[in-house]
Image (spheres, rainbow, N blue to C red):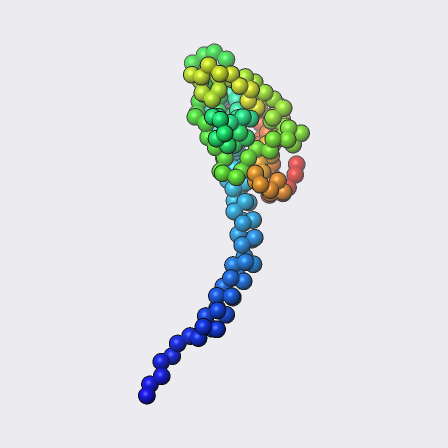
Length: 188
């Protein structure tokens, strides 16, 4: 008589316990990697929009601003401190929005502490949430002159919304127009 070979219930439970243990040990590391990736991606997006604003300013001979929404675009939509866009203040052919609102990845925000994110110390009222809106709102900004360099030194502190210990800094120097991104957890 031929015997069938199969796994016993105990063997299956041991394998499931081992898989559960491995997943339980690796879950915090995976979660941490996801947070770091969101913050890094958000930092890169802001870096790129700052470069674009400076290039737009110098290419068109007009001042530009990168504005950050410090309130939700619409009630309760969670875009406060996540939304940003390039904006041209004043009058002229480029007055108003150059690009639509863009957003940091879900979970990544600009730190709302203005002593850390000094960009939040500069505010100006613009039509909000878009150029056709009659509503004015105060937004934070980094201002670029017609030559394409930042008019003031400012820093943006991008953090994970649920864990402020996961962060990156971006600084914009008014002298020399340099933009510097600091490493994860590294402070200026």
